Image 1: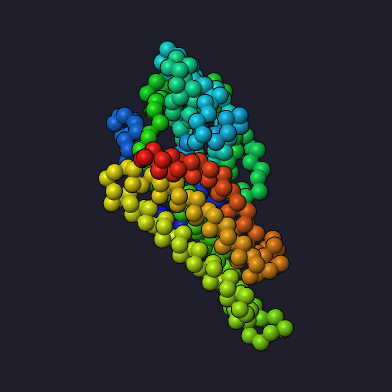
Image 2: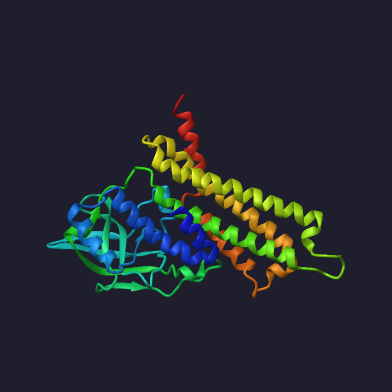
Length: 311
């Protein structure tokens, strides 16, 4: 999955991130058996028939869901189901989804649960309001729920899984691919661009060679750390051995990826800002990754706590 998502990220970051959400959601649900066996079997048929799913957790007033805020979206139990009302933000692939797993506060239980919602149910609307700098093609519009009724059994999760989730590595994998694409473009440019002020191409210039070397080193480090973390999910039986690498992978890939793109744009020069060149899109899409989970400060805090709690 990590290698595939990185490859997709090279081709198109928004596509990679979008389908990565579907892959990771389905992967975690079935690997950790988060739902009842009946619902797992039922939804497997839907997936096999082409269903596309994502979670809808974020809300404008709640901030990042990873920080523990309570959703304003609420569910009220009816005789034979639940009635959902609320607005969700950052619903990637919103217009293409067939199903959405919605986080809502259940008043009866005084806790948060996740509901499987069919996109075609009455009261489900997609607002056409995704207007951002990067990752534009993810179509992460708001999801609006107006008295949406779902069956009782579609309350599929009542507790958030505490187990490490290797599928979340789809996020750094996508951004690693974007950084790789920027590197590839800069390398091709360097070995082809030959201004009349020098003999040969700019790839022979010491400053360009330094930047090329820095880019390659940053990518090598990020890639090896990410791959090592992914391998850890197959090697380690103890969850504590993989939690920190999972958090660190996203932070490392993001920070080093941002630096790679900066170096690539320095190599290409002012031409990197031209809208008909892909570097400006790589730059914009890469910045969006700063706001995907886990957030950098949260990752560092969790890693620090894991260290201090051992003493």
